[in-house]
Amino acid sequence: MNAANLTPLSLYVHLPWCVVKCPYCDFNSHKAGKSPPRAQYVEAIKADLAIEADRATGRPVQTIFLGGGTPSFFDAGQIGEILAAAHDDLNIAADAEITMEANPGTVECGELASYRSAGVNRLSLGAQSFDADSLRALGRIHGVDEIYAAHNEAQTAGFNSINIDLMYGLPGQTAAMAVADLARATKLEPQHISHYQLTIEPNTVFYSRTPVDMPGDNTTYEMQEACHRHFRDAGYGQYEISAFAKPGYECRHNLNYWTFGDYLAVGAGAHGKITDQQGTIRRYEKPAHPMAFIKAAKIQPTPVEPRKLGHDDILFEYMLNALRLPRGFTSTMFEQRTGLAFDLLLERLGECRDKGLLRETTDESWQPTELGLRFLNDLQAQFLPA
Image (cartoon, rainbow, N blue to C red):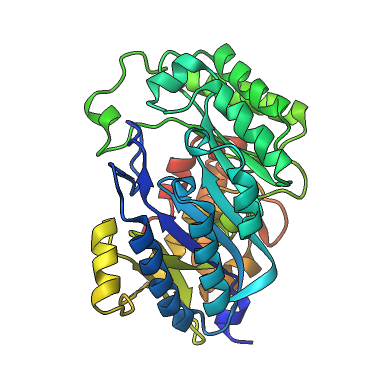
C-alpha cells in the first residue's frame, strides 16, 4: 500500500466572517459589515472544492470541519450547498464526522435543525464563558442565556455530538470562578469540551491594549489543575492538552491533525497538508483575504503550488502535534506518518526523558509526563530543527 493510502484524509473549509472581531482573536476572521458577499463566497468555495478533488486522488475523506470566522453566519441552505459540492467532488466516507462551529449569538430559533438536515452531524458552540462579565470582557456578542438556548436547540435538533468551547485565564478571573464556569458547562452534559487558556497573541486588540487584571502564571496553573479535577469527576477524559470528551466522543478531525494526518484546504487562508504516493509531504495555503480568495476563484481557479517539507520540518511538525496528546505516540506511527526512521528521534527522546519531560511506556511508546504537559512549549522546542 502506498504512503498516501496509509495516511487518513480530512477536509477543512474556512468561512471567514464574524459580526465583530473579538479582541483576543488572531484567526483569519473578518468583520462582516452590512452586506458580505456570502453567495459569491459559496461559489468560490465550490470552485475550490473541484480543485481539491485533484489533490485527493479519490482517497476517502474521513472528516469535514467548517470553521471560521463564524460558519453559522452562513444560512443552512448555503452550508448545504457546500456539503453537497463536497460530496459531488470528493469521496466522503459514509460515516464521516462533519463538524460546524456556531456562535450562540448568531443562531436563530430553528436554524440548528436546518443545519442538521443539511448534513452537519457535530456541532461546536463557541460559548467561551458562562459569566456575563467575562463575556463582556472578551467582546462576545452573546449572553449566558443564549448559550443555554443554543445548547438546548442543538439537542432538540438531534445533535448527539456537541462540543462547547470554554476559556480560562480570563481578565479578573480566579480559580474558583474558572471552576464555576466549567461546572455550568459540564452540567449541560455536552459530549465534548474544548478548554483553552486565554493567551495574548500578536496582531490582536488585547496585544496592544492588554487588560490590566490578567491572572498570573501561578493562578492560571491553579485554575488548570482545579478544572482538570472537575473534568475527571464529571466523567470527561483528557485526550489532548485542551480537549476533554466523554468516551467515544473525541473529535476525529482534530485527532487527525494531532496525529499528522493529511487534510485538504478550502476557503480563504485555509492551510492544507498532503502526502503523495511516493511519501512526499507538502503543505499549501489559500489566499488569506476573502475578497482575494473570491477574485482568484473567478479569474482562473488553479491549484496553489504546495511546498515540499524537508526531513527536519517533518520531524518537528510531527512532534509539535503528537506531544499535545497525553497518550503520546509510537515508533510505528511516527515512521508511518513521516516516512522517517525512528532512530532520528532517539537521542532527543532520551534527553527529554532524563529531564523528566517524557516517559517510555513500552519499547515503542512515548508519552509526555505531567511536567512535560505543564511545560509543553519547552518540550516541543527540544525537537526544533538545529
